[in-house]
Image 1 (cartoon, rainbow, N blue to C red):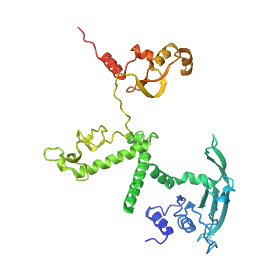
Image 2: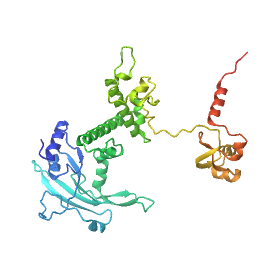
Image 3: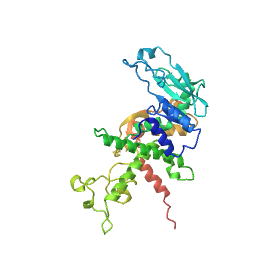
Length: 382
């Protein structure tokens, strides 16, 4: 067992095979940030380090500060409220290596929305930069002062805080009192995040381009998690549910942890094309739907019904486009008097005014598709 965080960090560096390389910058969370760790990384490996510090309250019994402690204590809310946003203080301390070379460790305290502390050998005595934050009361982002270590930490913190942020956004954990389950879910979350980072790094236009959809900002991370979950379930079912000699899967051979047809009836059809049931052409399967949520499906009743929103009539809009092709929507509304209505076909999602509905000019989507398909068929020749 390791006695302290310094031994943990030292063994991690040695086990990674990077102990012979100097000049790295290591960014840490507040669990590992101590003066002993910062000094050890510089003196033994020539690594620069930076980490956040959780400032502690002043103790009543022993209020004295030791030389290796962080120079500032946690401030009260009243004291923080008097400080302007962007206020920061620095304190430096010099040390010497075994070869008598000097280096400096700096402690920085900065007020953002709350007080933030760093202990670092990166960006020592390097001045200040500008930080931008959004505010509810202001339309544009607010600009204020920040120490240079804030921008350095924002660039290098991705291995620490973004991993935790990813786990909070796409958590798979369940609320339970069993600590070992929470630990298991946390380990799976970190594994999924690590695999996702590797996938986004290796995919290119020529190498595994089918993985490029997971880099999309439009639910790319969600699709990756869903597809990985389905792949894990497929692997589990394949290992437990075996085919018989006739090459078919039988319900009697299902493992106990899978829903049984005899108890719960038949399953809903699944058309995802990804799960075990779709791949093996089994007509029933888990009704998890597609990757995104399924929209509500309404049957076309051929009646003019209430729509959820009020929009322009589809026929009026088409006629105005033919009449004034160079005009925008607002101009066409004034010239053609486009009628806005919340009535129409609920299944097709089209708003149609009373005039064009009665004249039967409007065609439903299924009528349009049949018309287009009939035009594609070649007429027989003599």
